[in-house]
Length: 385
Image (cartoon, rainbow, N blue to C red):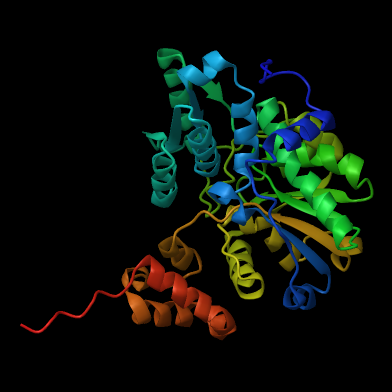
């Protein structure tokens, strides 16, 4: 099944082939619906919970499909990729399952939890330097390219690789199946976008399976290269390294292989602020009982901030909750908890986070308390001497 994977053409038939290939390896993640969320938004919101996927995000779809398509010789030598976290974890998990050697290059400021998780799957993690003014993904890519050359590893790209794009598209195939099962006809599908692999693959599937559904992309403010590129009709890059809590959506520009698809298929793209993302993370926790990382919450942020066209806002909207890879300390920090809450233990930590999240989070406090106690239980009492 080997082919040239960094240039060429990918179609919905490739997505179909990927779905068959992946069936035994990935979860068919749920399509969630919350009455509370519907009431809050005035629309019917269907949430594809890729945060519950193996390795914590949709990325294992494309990563697993690509590894399954490696030649025997490529599998024997091993692979290398650059990733701010989620593709690295997805690839590490896929390689662990298929027993292929894996090296992941991450920016030096990648969340420690993502580094640790990739290592737990069996990958070697190499950290690239953070250079002021230079995009963190660019630096990581350069290191990965160097390792591929010096160690004869196959370099896998998080969104340019055709087999990765096809694998990511299986998410939309599942969405279309699940919508039919619940009698829903979505008017819009909102997808978080970095380089565009997930969006491009999903566009291919949506065009055939749900042709009346409009696809919108969302990215963080400061990384609005798709917003600007679609307006200009050509690929434009991010300048510098703007600050953003959405560490998983910081690609430097639309992909060379993804933009020809997304530029034709997307109905539009928009950007959301850090504050809007924080609010979406809290709403997801309270109404859906799921934990989303900042990048994974951008699609919900679009709905909550009413950034969709007016004719879409009160209709049936599918959103991809693309990932949930963050630890409890970052969850608290991102939501604005005062410094020190993440270092508390047991019941004190639960009370601190409760005050931070406010009264609206009390309904989910039992879940939060259980997570806290599992993550960092109180030490046992000292026995009497």
